[in-house]
Length: 259
Ligand code: NAD
Image (cartoon, rainbow, N blue to C red; front, side, top):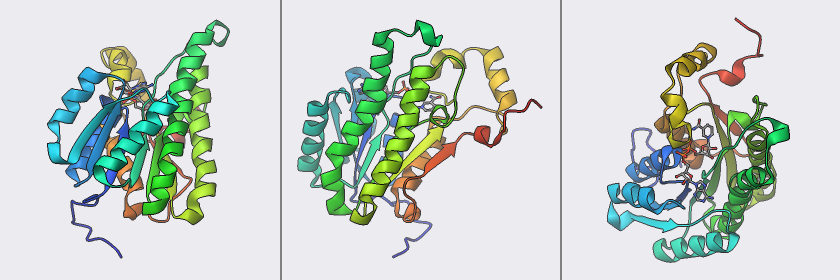
């Protein structure tokens, strides 16, 4: 059944988990789902910021858990706790991520493993823990990848590798889960104003260089990514699965030729 396009309660009575919810895109996503009526579980390893964001939202429809998504047992326990508290699960947003870069021959084992642990392991653990519950509700998964998952950057090899893995993991899960009624999609934002990029946002020269190369002429705001995540998770995207959706102001439309 089609919903009323004017309705603002697309997620009324739905249960949504958002990882990386203490900051940036995850915080904006938690606020968005909550504004559309969802019961939202906010997950992050940063207790202080997590509590600050969680306290903004209605207490009867909000819970939060301090979890490192690279810890599979903790992720399993968290998903079980959310399902116990709210009675099921409809949407899993695997958004927590970290970034590391540098010349490829200077990347340390530690840098490599930290990016893989959160950005790849964390996304897989979140998906795996959610699947049994999502098959019961015919729910959906949205994974936060990046434009860095569909093309190379200079000196960001761990991040490029990790986000590429998220894009293809999303496709693989879409294959396996489609006939069970579970949709799995990824979003690929370009440079977005968040905690991860705070240093860059203070650099006017760098921002101007980015703006020059982005067809829409500016960086992305976290709320603009959250809106697309909510769309993909909603019935409005009922025939979308396995997609990686660019939220990039047109960056990926370019063939790289100079102006
Ligand atoms: P952010 O730093 O503002 O937020 C990321 C959150 O994830 C933080 O609250 C952090 O504590 C949490 N986190 C990190 N590792 C974790 C772990 N192991 N367990 C639990 N929580 C953890 O950054 P953001 O830009 O909002 O990033 C959200 C996602 O968007 C990431 O996956 C990132 O790679 C992706 N992304 C960001 C941009 C950008 O330009 N900001 C662009 C494309 C994709």
